[in-house]
Image (cartoon, rainbow, N blue to C red):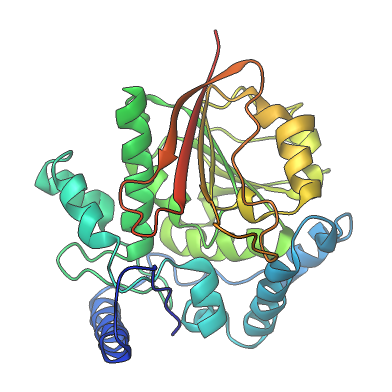
Length: 331
């Protein structure tokens, strides 16, 4: 298990080792009493092949993410249930910072939700390998982090997220944000844009939680976004998506667009102009010195028809490198 320790957190190797031990123990206890709602959902390797027929993954991702994807395929082909416990993939998909961020985020969230609602939103779904770091809420650092993003965004903009209808997410990770948003409003139409390998892995985890009937794959032969479902769109069909999706209420890119390459940034920001979403929730890391692994980690170039509602460091960012940028489309 790999962990990321923010600068200024001063965690010793002994403390890190204890955090890992505790996390694995909490996670195993959680899974011993919780099972996936749908155990018969499996990885569809044929779907990956079909999606890749018209997609050159290398064109859209950085070498860093190519390494992650190559490892994902190795693990998937042997035992997909081990994906979230594989050291490289766990590091790529999960926030794991010895609970440093969570210790600031939990009090923030407790001030904004009643106890039962917060417990409902933070509880992780059970699927193989999911890490649990908070035994009180049965939650992970990743999910706590995602709810913090959404809460900070809705608070700044004075919006009720449950009233939104369409959410478009660029880069879906292992499906955590989509899972959370569906808990906020089960009738959301959720669209994830990603590369084929990631799409199929997201469908595996979300299918285990909600069932295959809640998933829809948008392809050249099925160019329809289905309302109230979780829809998946391969990045190479992102341009076509603009022809058959209603205006999203929210476009989310939390540390995903900033980790994408220049080709993808140009496509999403300039060519597609964020699908003219009403609101944009963007998170990124501002490096003090250039990071060659993430050459496009920068703020969004604000389109002329958008206004910033917030742009600044995340309140929980110990090293002052994690930033939010929220945009609203001008009426």
